[in-house]
Length: 250
Image (cartoon, rainbow, N blue to C red):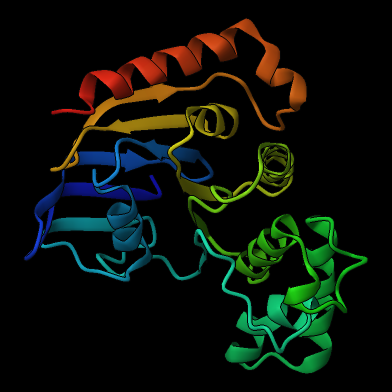
């Protein structure tokens, strides 16, 4: 067990209760996708796991024994790349190491290694305004991974990208997960993305968000473009779409 939710309830003054999770366990090294209607608490769940917010009620316990404060090392990628425009790609990737006080040589080496893993080895000297949308998200992903986090949190990181770029990034992310397994939580509105990337898919209903389905995915990583053509993949995405329609109005 890497993460356990016990009797979690979270609410905001302006919108009331947004999330209710009586019990949930997430295994170390798993890739879990969260899907559901807007406002069902998916991003709130990620913020609780990251330690950016504390549950209104209940306990989040990590495998290291910490409660409600997040794991020791967490990498986060949001919908926007949030790169610093005055820093080159290499320095944006190395920023977490710089903040931690890592010396220039080691952090430059680590940043270049991570850039190569996400296909940016030829772009390390470019500035953010010289990058495509996909390259910006690759930079943000490399920055999240440069400290070798125990947990990777992805909050709709590819939602603003065109379909071809998004598919390629999904394939790269699947390969990265296979090469260096870490616990990953992905929030997405795309059933195709969830079915392609996740080992396990949690479907939440309209707020107050509750888990209404917990679906295991048998296909191992890495997954390639042909995965999307398999009959099992089409059955899974159709089933997820049906679940979303059934619970969108609850």
